[in-house]
Length: 218
Image 1 (cartoon, one colour):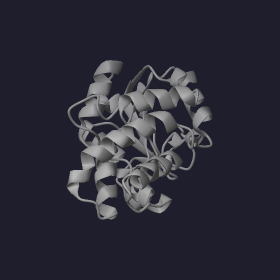
Image 2 (image 1 turned 90 degrees about the vertical axis):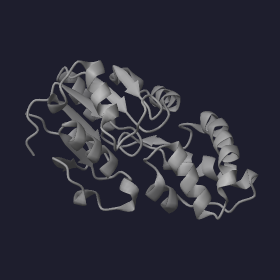
Image 3 (image 1 turned 120 degrees about the horizontal axis):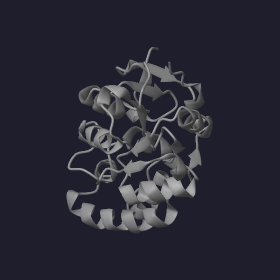
Image 4 (image 1 turned 135 degrees about the horizontal axis):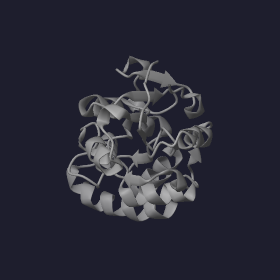
């Protein structure tokens, strides 16, 4: 795995730094219960997260047999409950703090780019004491398009003042890898994330790590 000497790094949030499945399961099932719809399990959520809250809610409603007309109500309830529960059932993955510390010791400016809404991302990072590592945080509502579109990564590179080829993307899914490839960023994927239920090592990436603190740079 030869990643050269990156000048900055972009790090995904859900499934890369923080295991947030517990939050998603709890919030979705509160909403479904209020709408008198069947519950979903952790395995379903693990296959479905990663493409933004809108996608998660639509897929969940489809899975439980709810009509499209339910979406607006479900969306409003989801936002209300998620703001209250955000981080309560989530844990920082082992090796994340050490990995971020190592990147910071190298003098690399760090950014978090996630498909989670920016407000929720900022609150989660602060709640888990990870916010101090990041110069900027961009959520799924920051730009016109989300990952796997390259736009968030390109805009993030502009904010960091680095070229994409010199900006390492660290994520957990094909969303992150596809966005990085299209933007021209090198990309490393963690093996413990979600990746829509698909084998992570089948994804086109420059390397794979089992813990963030195992990342080796030139």
